[in-house]
Amino acid sequence: MFGISEIAILIIVAAVVLGAKKLPGLARSAGQSARILKSEAKAMRSERTSGRPAPEARVIRADGGGAAPSRPGTASGPDAPH
Image (cartoon, rainbow, N blue to C red; front, top):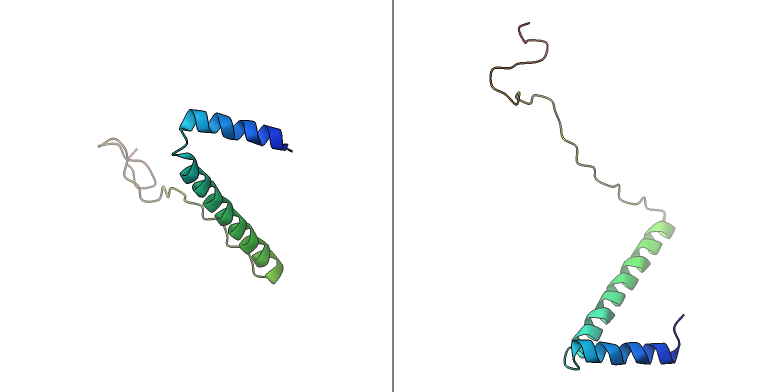
């Protein structure tokens, strides 16, 4: 993937662009994100192998039943005068 020389060049460029004071915080945030991603992937694998069904995706639908007409004085539906 990346060799040592490419990583070193990337770190030097990041130090110049961001400043040396911000790099430790950036590295800490990246490490924390990697740990969270790893733990979530592990949890998903354990759910899959445990036989428990995966939680279903929630779908939000707009229900048009019983909605008022958008313009006053106009009615539609079975009770509307024609």
